[in-house]
Length: 139
Length: 129
Image 1: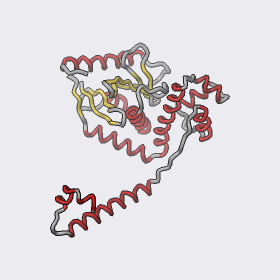
Image 2: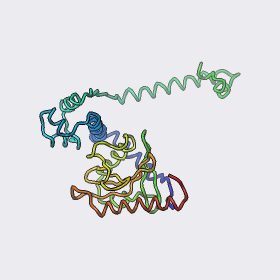
Image 3: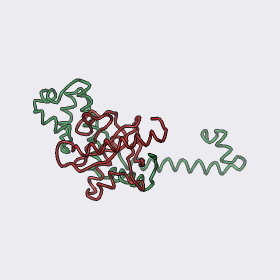
Image 4: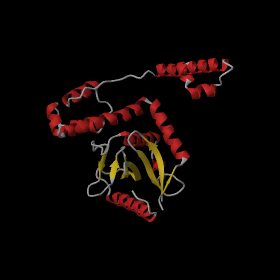
């Protein structure tokens, strides 16, 4: 019978691969391009546009649109914006500052530590009691 | 036959059929002939599949196989992976390294028979899907 199983090694390898991708700019680009390619394609479908229609709007060939959809890694930002605007989409590019994110985690942990220190200072109320009464949130 | 869990995204779980020891068929058969980069590419595509809306509209990423019921392929070049849907989740049957533009008929037949075997065993098990 078909059994649904979890293999820790396989799962860990998969997670590890995702982490590797997260750290590598070109693999990251490839992943983001998948979303972009699908988004463009979805919008074409929504607007009932064929590849030829889009090519016409862009004054380019049908094969150019096919190339675009099949993920040319070196798509220019200008091309991305041109195509998006032709489809009535406005792209936004977000930057995630990894350093900021680390600082935030550090900051949160500092606040957390401070709270725990304050709590342990009061001798009458244990941490657990205070937490259960909801006092932890208020202090 | 076993189904081994790979990843869960915001849209669905992705698992793969496995024959023994819980190693997905596609990994057991393909990984020895693939470089690291291609393996990571496959992971990218599976991650996409776990988060995207279904069906995927971009046929250069994934498409339904013509004349087949509930059988799809996903295309991390030069690899083709076959999968079918179980409810909202995706289950990968197997994969092969693509040599021609057209999908190989014998590989489609194999995907079909693996899928059939899965559903037959499911039925024998008395579970409902």
